[in-house]
Picture 1 (cartoon, rainbow, N blue to C red):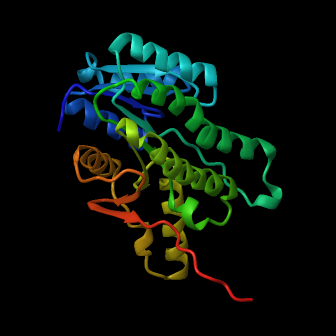
Picture 2 (cartoon, rainbow, N blue to C red; picture 1 turned 135 degrees about the horizontal axis):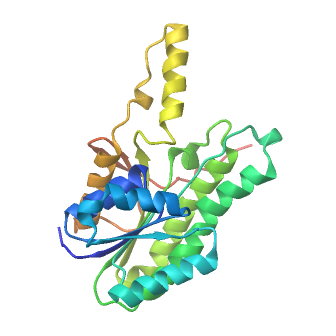
Length: 260
């Protein structure tokens, strides 16, 4: 692993983002993490105090275009470059579509889709100027591939990440910028409530706990993402799934003639 890279992780104060921050910091990299609240920023700084010389925690609302452009400008002024971007910030606000509020739709799409433009465009503009390879990894979900009941907003937003990844990878590969997406399975603040509901439902019905919900840790996801970035064999424009020690890649949809 190369050390002293400049790594930007959005939503890096908890969950997989926090695990990634720890992993990059322990490898000797300079890491910038963001959150939309100063409370989360302060807590992350306290939790990562041993890395204070290489950690920069910043308040930034990824839904705010001016916030994001100022963040990137500040990073470039301080470090001179950005080597890795992890688009990790994301939320869910579940509910059946027919009664979903406009607020829940807008919150999820603003955070999970619009942030891709707000953060990534100024980062790409900087990476295009750099002579060394650069990397952009964005978090998607199986919800974006298959859809999940009660998650039309979240499923739509994560499907957007996949299309974004495919298209951007084609545009920037001539600048030696690798663009990939990760569909992680890990116990986080977002997944633990769902896992508990499944456990309770299985116990009530006397059914076995499904393998689908036997998922790994955020630290395992972080380790595998860094291994993908470090490997010279990793292709661009790919959606990877990670669960524990297992890594797989999803094939793009195939087209078959449909006869009516």
